[in-house]
Image (cartoon, rainbow, N blue to C red):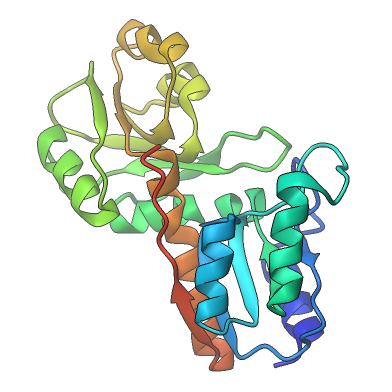
Length: 251
């Protein structure tokens, strides 16, 4: 499949132009390779990830965290190394950050909701004007202990739990990645439990203040699900070969 055709499809499917982000998303690095047969999937763009994709002979690396962020940098230092590696191996880089969090079919939060039995009743959390998180009732109102066990098994990561709410989970809000600043908002929305990625000391007492169960399942771990769902979508629609490269950070 031609790179430009695939990029145009992804831009439209993910609403790249409609969702304001912290840096330009979509095709971030264009190599000389215009024929896409193999797509490597990953959360981050790091030298080790690029090397693994190159060893697999990937034509495109599709990631959640690309290489272009708030400010325009010189193509030097760590950024330069990543770009040189991509171009040297003929790998195109496509990034979808907030558009992949927000997507209602293959997005991180929609996928987490499906995995853990949350019937999405509403979307919330609009750092750049488009809602990213989900909230809804949890099938069967499982115990917090059971739900945490399921999350740890399916995301293959040890969760940190602040059990300040009820022992059974009726309504859960989800925000992949860093969502610790949203505890008060989640409580106001009516959730008794909140699944997000990572936290900091400054957010510890907020969960206690609001009587909320908070499950910190890992920034990396909660953002592995969207790229994999998107990869499955592309494989089914275009018969492309896709492979997820897992480089957990423990964060």
